[in-house]
Length: 176
Image (cartoon, rainbow, N blue to C red; front, side, top):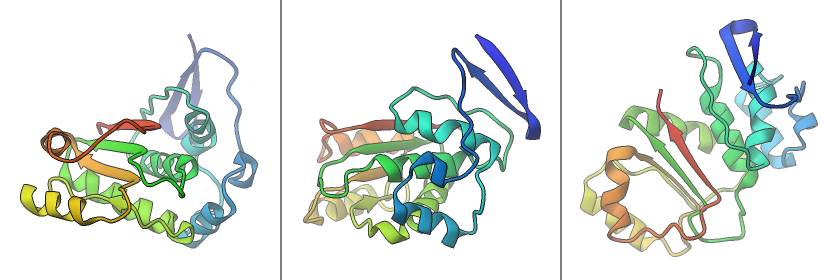
């Protein structure tokens, strides 16, 4: 495995040539997603974003490991928002985080970046409300939940009750 040391203390380990995408447009992201990116304040992709978003969208297994504040959470959000089928009402993405705080951070970024996509079937409730409150919320959603962000210790309690994962396209483990 080759190693490439990049600026900003980011290291990429790859098995093949890596493509660097210098702009969000070059990644061929949805038009509405690019609008959300610019509205959020991004103008050019970070080093991590340039290298990781497209491989994730293409279904590659990717491990992101870099210092704080290098846009790893945004890589997750942009990848998820690009691959989600907005017309399908099944759970397609499960994002598991170590803490309630990280779950909330991911939720805020997903909502902000996805503003122009009109995402309405997203739920980040695990570890924040009581178990019964979360079950009631999920059961009362008319159209299925497309994306779920959860703290790791909570998701399995709900899976036994009402969640099904037969339509998953992506599982993300956010462990930082």
